[in-house]
Image 1: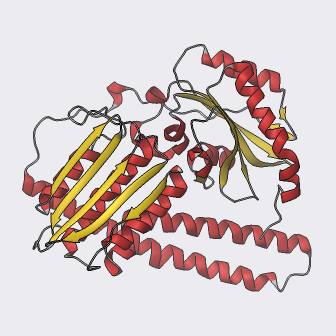
Image 2: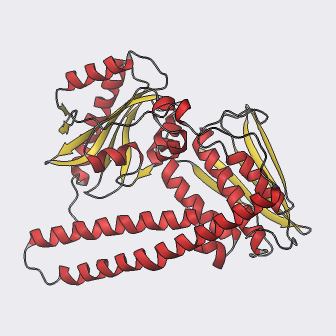
Image 3: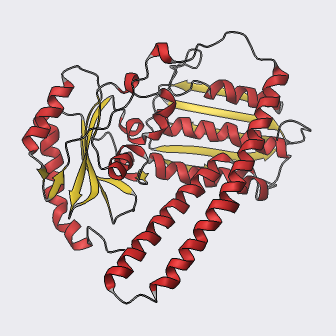
Length: 396
């Protein structure tokens, strides 16, 4: 593994300085949230280590691979980002790509790459939880006052990335005509088949090729003579490991192999582990099953429903802990996903993201003859699925 840009003794010595720096920036300019995210070495994930104005500790559990999330994009591109109105400037379907936005309920932010030794090793994030046309002036004033440095890090403030604004009139018109139930069944079945095919190709094709390259690099490591050459090989190996982790996450989200080989509960735990790293919320599983396997259609649809329920809780509830209860009794599968965060109006929910989550969950429940109930209020949200375990047919 390549040498760390931030050795442990360096991090320990800089901790107080970085903490003081983010607090000073937050207070001086009136930001709602300021954070410095750092990587342990080139190609490693970023974590938001130092912060001021946070609503809790959730953001510190977010792990961002290069190219993912605000910090990951900034590190990979080496360019600053600026959004003054997230709801207007980011496609709602892309919200999940920015977990810090959900963790801290941000509406406007400026993210600046941080360099050390000529390499981008971190990101400075300054943000508001409101929208105001004067925010741009605040960001500019901060950049001018920093004058290219914060603590021992170089601040990059030129070459801002340009993002196309996604406005309402550009979004495709929605039809009010209902889709026939048989057609929905066919569409969902086709989606699952395609998810399974792509997941298998990624795992059996690209991932295996990368493993082969990684093995060759390890063999090459012992053949080269200079330390510099070994360092370059180590960095390449670390990048391949990161890509493999990313591919694994993608294949799990598409169609986890555990769902086909180990069953519903194991697959859901595997997906929850990824959500924990991405969104920072702790996901606690409770209950016991008397059998590990159910009919394939039940496993698939129950998994997708619970996957969506957990994802929604991670993204929207602002809750640090999510409870998932799984048990079976009397021929029925009982699953509940609950949080103690901010609730929503079940009858008229605020649409964020694609707006297809809750209707899709209900439709999948109908396909397996299950009952899906959603209760939400000031004390949090609970999604409960009760499905017959002896159901036949359906969409797998």
